[in-house]
Image (cartoon, rainbow, N blue to C red; front, side, top):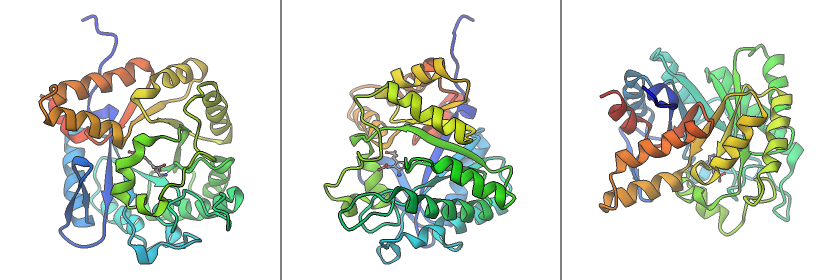
Length: 310
Ligand code: PBG
């Protein structure tokens, strides 16, 4: 009766890792109960998510080494893994939105989100041209939401322009606006296979400094002015202050991302009997809503949705 906050499957977004092949369900060592699925198996998982009332999924590809290149050209190949996956999912007519990550890290040889010069420095504007092409291929394949996670300056506006110019007026942009250079992404980089490429190189020339909160206000403001429909803040739990700050400053839907390292921490602790995993997940997901997020991207979405509808 008196609870200020509630949560249901409609507030959860399930990320999926997609891989080549048939009938593949490949476990990820650093993320218990998370798998890389071939497209046929992915469809079965999405059916479960849709049935539970989850409203969106978020796709990430594991790209084979031979398709990675310095210019990341596989990222906009209409027949790349993600575009094929989107077309197959769309055929099923599930009542679920498809979001796809826009960034070059699965496709570059050095694992960076953009293309780089000979000193490994990011080329911001050249990268944006490729991100626009990547977004177009995704939109043409049927993607509902473009989610740029690359953190290049000015990319939301340019992606919006390309979508409009090509008639994709209804494709949404939900941008990762406040994305911090975080070590909590470690397990994700195992999952997509960018960790070995990245080696010890950091992303802190383009992702945010975790010592800064106010800087998030300018990052979010820019993305809104460039045409973002909603924004993502990530990581999640160590950044609840940022969610709450952005909620006070702007009237735009906020999505929190409970990232791979957070997921694995809770999951592995639970598996070791340190606490009740489901209860801890529900508590953590409620904390995002309390802070001001309307939805949460979490690898535990399907698992927790099953508990929430009971
Ligand atoms: C890639 C991307 C990352 C995540 C989402 N998109 C990793 C990174 O920036 O290195 C992290 C998600 C997670 O850790 O769950 N641009």
